[in-house]
Amino acid sequence: MSPHPSEPESTTEPDAPSYTLVSAPADGVPEVVRTPEALAATVRALAAGTGPLAVDTERAHGFRYTGRAYLIQLRRAGAGTVLLDPIAFSGDADRADLHDLADAVGDAEWIVHAATQDLPCLAEVQLLPRRLFDTELGGRLLGLPRVSLGALTEQALGMSLAKEHSASDWSRRPLPDSWLNYAALDVELLVPLRDWVAEQLDAAGKREWADQEFAHLAEHAGDEPHRRREPWRRTTGTHEVRTPRGLAVVRALWEERDELAERLDKAPGRILADRAISGLAARAEARDFTLTRDAVRSVEGFRWRQAARYEANWLAATERALALPGPELPAKRPPAEGPPHPKGWANRFPEAAERWAKMRPATMEVAEAWSVPVENLIAPDALRRLAFEPPTPATTASVDAFLTDLGVRPWQRALVVPVVTGLI
Image (cartoon, rainbow, N blue to C red; front, top):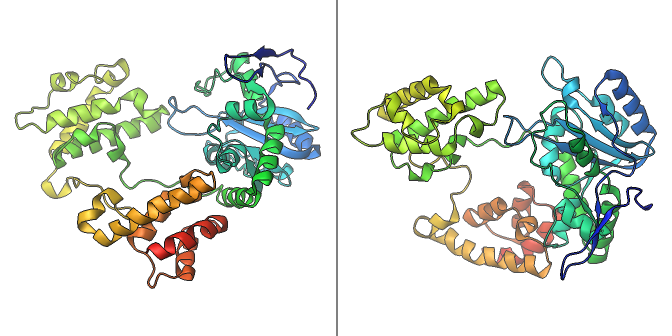
């Protein structure tokens, strides 16, 4: 890579290796692509480019209801860096369609850092890879202790990227110049970083592992995300709500807030805090509780300016919950989605608990021996399902087939199956 023209600052900390702070893109910050003409020119430039395609997105988590992309960054040799505003190309369905752009770079390997974060919003705009290389996942397979983009570029390239706008509201328009500078930097070093990670994977004998993982990500890039059956149960503080009646209040307030958040396109927590929901639900469990405006306002969070605007909504939702007949109240425990948690197996499922007590530490030992996080060796849900209800008889072939059906990759099965089969 050629020397950076912006005379980056060399940073040294006590007892730490020195690295270069990259504060501006080598080619400068390009104009944001916002018009059909600019998009067509971008498609031509990227199609004429060579080599892999560096890809990143910026979303507005914590500000907006959805996880849609509000900026897409692309970089390819011969085309330079592209900053694309997908919102400018939203159609009648409120979705940008970048199918032509996807076709133009369909032959390229896409380089993404932490692909599972970016692929869902790329899928919304019909921009999906046929092949990819995930530098963050590669770092995990190498057993590196720090795998953020900044940490990896420091270790691999001796360069550090400015990260001051990672939690900004990218739905803001116009986007400030300093934010665009930061966004362009996110794809500046992905190609050399990919090459370094690939070399390390080759040296560690883990390249085939990575190729299988990357192929799995690309194959499932357009899949619908898993949706929990009762997402309201994840409301912070719900564990302090003891009765079905109180849980009904949590559910009603959560659903009311979710409808408002979707309609307003705001993050739910910016309308009403979780703790306010669970706090009112806990008070509503008392026998002497009377639903009034003062009762609602007595719970911290409902007096926020944003929450107070929808006080009538909270009152109506709580009233509906309190009026529900017994059969319509939610159960104290959520419906099962797969095996129950192993911590409750000992009394109800002692044989499964015994298998889990042997299989879990055994797989952890394998993960440690190969310097890979245990969750990357085998998905926790797959191991739980195997321990809870293994195939009968449990042979190497039957266990391998069982895990194959759960999406466990060949390299993972090659390491796990020989170890766990004898423990079933």
